[in-house]
Length: 211
Image (cartoon, rainbow, N blue to C red; front, side, top):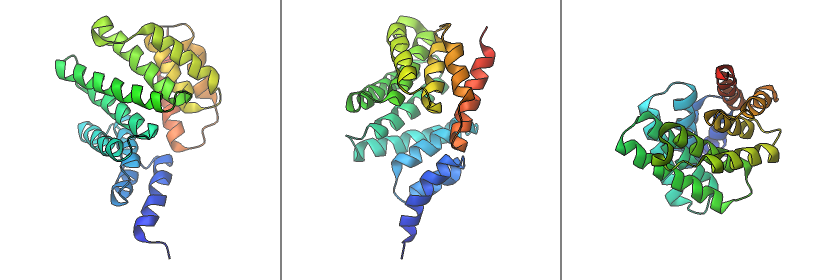
């Protein structure tokens, strides 16, 4: 017989892929799965306008996942992504800058644990591009590093919505002319899940702002 906790462990990732982010978060918390909880809370904040509460939940669960799974690049990615959301919401303040640097450290750690993964490369590219766009050298963002990571990721995973979208977003932040093609590819790929469709919507929105 499958236990309730076991059923919740199985249910949480499916709910996440299905776009039911708040339910995925609840199921993951009940199943003691902080990694999925962090990803679900971050998705609720980013794709469902969940606000500061969901960002804080994503960070809290990401910290727990990283403590419990220090060698898991996905845990570091979840924490870095959540901290990135928190930094963006914090505006142009010293606290937001410190949070952004903490996000970069987590993303650097994720890539060090799995240097060949295009998804990690694309997210770190977006961090560098976003930091550069917001505050140039003061932020620690490196546009050359962002461009290299983004283009490498896009070439390595041409059929992955997540990678193409985040690589394209990084290039768009840099005002790189290659952004249009990468974002267009992200928007045109077959979406296997509701989560992919939300990522695609973000790519299409960015594509519409390009001049």
